[in-house]
Image (cartoon, rainbow, N blue to C red; front, side, top):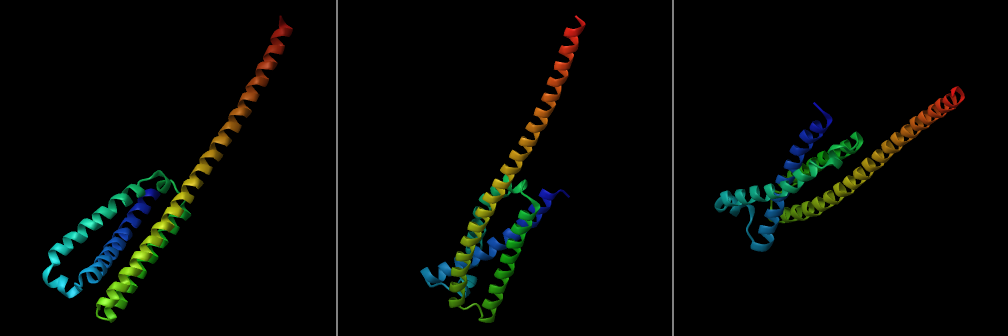
Length: 179
């Protein structure tokens, strides 16, 4: 399997898990704070509608991420940058499940759900900022690598041109001597 495919096939499931959990907690927090509707009420009366709403929100969040993952800057980025991105995603998934575990210890009370929603909102914003910075750094590295490659090609071209020029001068000199 090629490197780009390995990065994409590893990062997409992690991103999907992060989106599903974050959107669920954020929606739960919003429903508790704005409408006073707890998780038990949603499970009892609004389960199907709520699940469809979560599905649509996750889909809408995945559209820009799909475009981002297909950018040349990510596909051509260095292996160390990809490993750093994957480790950030994996750490995020571990943190999310730790929050879920902590919430289960308190029987998913409304207060815990609101606190988790706030934490997930802040954390998702920070992750977005980190990935934007990492993407810019990766784009700059790719630009520098392309400039280095072009400079090496120009140097090689110049050396070959000088060699041809020297051979032509020698030929011209010999040609003048013969005639």
